[in-house]
View 1 (spheres, rainbow, N blue to C red):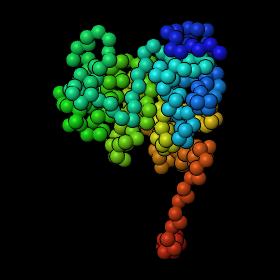
View 2 (cartoon, helix red, strand yellow):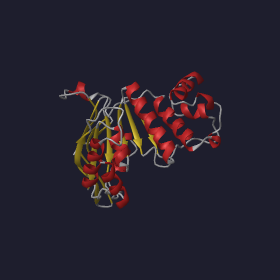
View 3 (cartoon, rainbow, N blue to C red):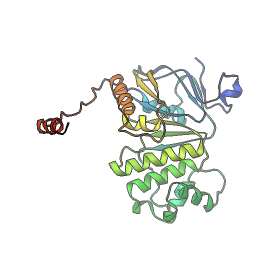
View 4 (cartoon, rainbow, N blue to C red):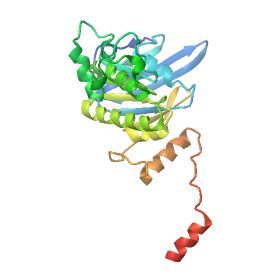
Length: 266
């Protein structure tokens, strides 16, 4: 099958039915005779936030590498925007360059420092412009990585478990930041994550990948901002865990004395 990777033609101009930031058709990738991605079909609409879940080894990371252009040994057709950017779990900052220079790393031409300053201000790091990467906290380093992605003005932002190494509190802040930036920017986002709660919290649509294909998808129609205490949130989380083959934890029963107190007060 002919391979068509990163063609510089937007899918809507190519005569498709609806605008799309990503359109994948019949995608397959084989390693040592084993098909890790097997005839996969995927569409991400312009401006849509999509989360991709799946067990380890299901092909998520391979798919993301293909979309970024890091893996071209494929069969099938892949159309993505020319302007795309990726933020990985590891910030991958160059320790010998100050934060603002890291943000501009890889940009064509000779962009001015002010370009980096604007992106860093957008992620709340305007006070760390001249810092060295080794002096940043984990959350700050991840925000610097995000600024490096945003400075490219992407039509498609690819996130590869960018919050996985963060502590719980920093992770919540980073999730909130990404949600706000997405709403401000309006770009399409594809988030690869192992965290079902994170997927429901951020995405318009959640996909479950299994055996190299998209095996299930769920629309998330909860109002924003979302509340994990919302019964609808819990229902969606349980639904997705079931498709991942994971039994959702059941709430611990209230102590007997609590029942007695409740009965007495009633």
